[in-house]
Length: 295
Image (tube, rainbow, N blue to C red; front, side):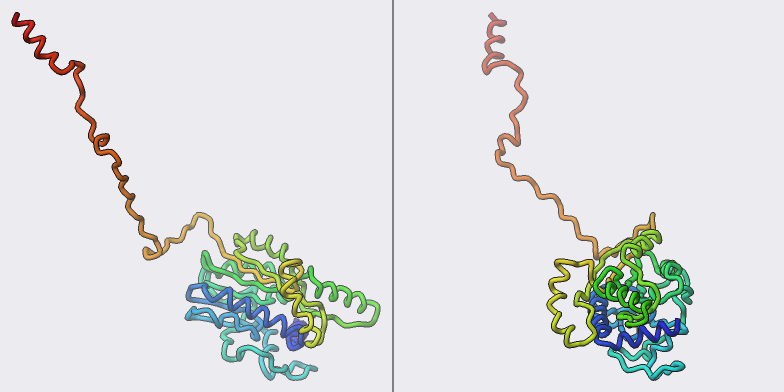
């Protein structure tokens, strides 16, 4: 696993890696800005400051034992020192060392969990997702990003693996675990009582290595989202933990005051006050009868 983490780290320092990081950072800033709560956790990829636009008072960054290779100045055996990548200082945000399958939090204690490429690096991605479901509060949110196995980048990765079997070529994407498709991830989320709130695909430029060619194909990001949306190189999913039989009460100030029903105008006052009930006698009938009786 350490070699996979190192490979992923150096790939993020390449032009396509920085292009992907910029897209994911923009999506994170949009997704978490209006999520309220008290406790937020990001697991892995310290180059992404996923909680920088969020206003939760307690924020943590968790790295596994192998994730120490992300830190500046880390020099694994046989590797050069890690280069400086854009993003926050990991030492400033690092709060704990923990594996995704065993988080040191009690049940129903976190309001937000970020998993940027975390499931791809985990030895048991489904167990890591179950652990996230355990620590999230009801109506808590999980944000997941990963490589899309149905994309132009994945197609080049499959071709590179075939060439490697023949003895030549190199991989385009990092060889860091198994890429988890969106449909499979959606099934896992539904199994754990998560409801997918939003999903986005991005990074539609072709699988090239130089920044010059990536800039020349920048127009594909605009047209790709419209014409082939599910073929982006990466996906971005926001899901909500639902608990059956539970309904959260909203504050009273969120309840809109109900207006009193407007009174109907009276168009005809005579119709509003009908005449008294008639006895069936014509005017003067009573007097005429009395006179006849006297005669």
